[in-house]
Amino acid sequence: MNIAKITKALASLRLDGWSLLFQEEEKASLYLTKGEEVETSIGSRRVSADVIIYRKYGKEVGDARFTIFSDDEQELKEKVRDALIICSTAKKQAWPLPKKQAYSAVALADEKIAAAFRKGATEDVNLALWKRIRGAARKEKGVNISAAELHLRKARSIVRNSEGVDAASIRTDLFIEAIFTSFSGAGKGRREQEFHASQTVGRLAEFDSVRFVKEYSQLARDVLRAERFERVQESGIVLTGEALREFWAPNLDLNPVVFHAGAQVKYRGLSRYDVGKRITNNARVSISSNPLVPFNPGSSRFDFDGVASQRVAIIEKGVVRKYFASQRYAYYLRVRPTGGLGVIELLSGKEPSSRLMDRHIVEIVSFSSFSPNSVSGDFSAEIRLGYLHADGKRIPVRAAMLSGNVFAMLDAMRMSRERMVAEKYSGPMTVRFDDGCRLAGF
Image (cartoon, rainbow, N blue to C red; front, side):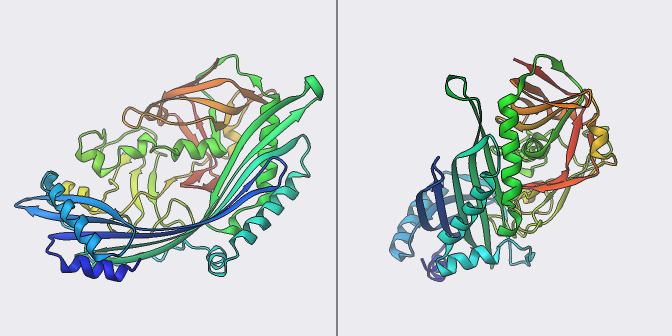
């Protein structure tokens, strides 16, 4: 697909505005069976372009989006003709398209992954990674890997529009998913338990196969021997590891504290925030959107409109400071556009993790799923694995439900001074909640 040809064709049409998001994705996947043997190795390439056209109607504008998979000019004209009909039924308050601007040079592409795609060596890279994982797994006792998948990806994005925006970006990532199965006993007395593991990194150097296997093997063994949590706890609830990352950057939606800082949410009357107003009495609560963390899956150079990504201080010392905003909703609210949401970045606390992890706390390391109500902040999430800290012991526990309200948890939230950086999260390594939630066994 020739993007120059598409751009020229769009510019020749009598449109009141247009934007184009060109995307090329190459992927190399390796699937492994329980016997640790390669089941399949697949390579794929997908090229497409999302086009949005605009038609003005006085102070209103209609827009329509469609996707094309070739640069055939006749096909493009037919889709534009149909889209113009849709524009007349989708009128809204007009807004200006972004103009040509400068973009950050944040590093998003790993040269080793990019080179593997150029040289046709992606299968070799995946096999070498699996060899390291398998080697580390064979040293672990009472655990094996039931299945695994490795995915290398290289993606190129280009945004152009009728106002002169011309931005390009290449990013890479490695996604690893594995099922660790722990076991004990034999025959009819044999017991097994599975633990799902996954990790996404922007470059190969960030994946430590030995650490990955060691950590998840221990979690799998702990799940096997975990006791039922047969009590109710309303303070001293601590999040670490994957549970902490998922709390602040859920896989399926935004954390409510972040959701309410969206300009689109504010414009639609759903946000409880007002700039300059306090949302918590906890002065340690400072949250930013940072899309400029090198090689992080949450980072970007620009958003789908071509607006340059930038770090935004959303909340400072418990007070709302800014909304993250696309071009359209920034114009509606009369604020500056910020580009897309980036890595959720929290200010560290002043206490060491050891002080937050005193006796009689429950440490949650993994949720089965964490999907809070973005508007209300209410949630209920089953824990996959936690630890009860009591009398100098760290006892694995399961079969418990954490419920509460994210906003109510902020006032009594304590954060460690030690930090961690993970997928879409950068902040304290340990976060403790002493109010606003409860953990109950079932």
